[in-house]
Length: 161
Image 1 (tube, rainbow, N blue to C red):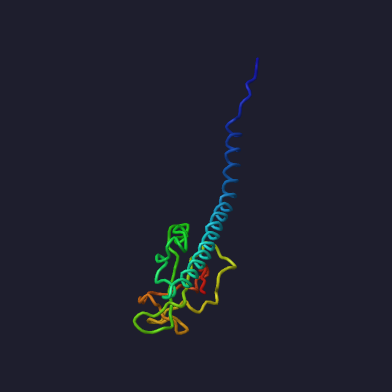
Image 2 (cartoon, rainbow, N blue to C red):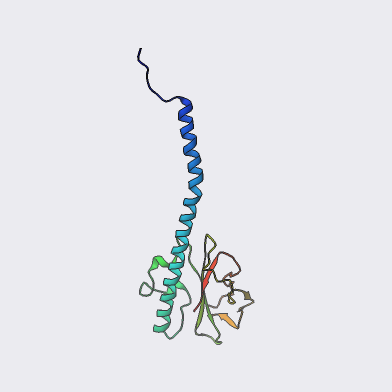
């Protein structure tokens, strides 16, 4: 009589259980790697936008633009103006000037990261909005009374010139 070789149901269930356990262990690591990659892309985009803003400032007498959408592809690739999740980067044009059309001589640019990073500037003094004034006598030169960038958020990556 010939015996047939085959897997028993218990053996199959053990293999499926081992695969499930490995998946549960590996999945969080893969998620963190993906989040880290998206954060790295955000920081690279911010650097690219900063360079574009510097070029814009040097070539225009009006100072920095009122919005990032004013930066044409001449200064920054259009896909660098939105983060990997499709959200626009936070940009606040600032001035110390007064009058009808003050020159934007300063800005605050930022984004929220998914993971905590050593690159985060936690000593930023241009983040809060009090009435129409941002601290240190800077005012928004876009004419809005919207809030500034929340530098108190532990996941905020923010830069300024």
